[in-house]
Image (cartoon, rainbow, N blue to C red; front, top):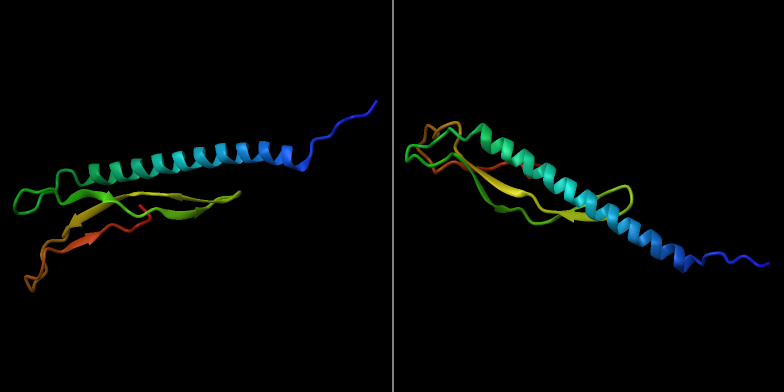
Length: 106
């Protein structure tokens, strides 16, 4: 009796499906973790207002998608952009609005 072994192509199809499942799950987990971090940051500064009564820390869209390297392959993810309005107060020179971006790793 002769046994049939799977060819490389058949194995590759199963591996690719598994890799796709792992990759999409990892991207979803990373997106959720980034959202939680941004929500915590916003909650920390929720009570801070500027002279006009506007929130000092606000959402400002999303950063461009950035590549990430996982153990298996490369992927991409987007994070929310957060803008802070001069948390330390205006500088002594009376200069601009003092808007700065939160580091991209958040």
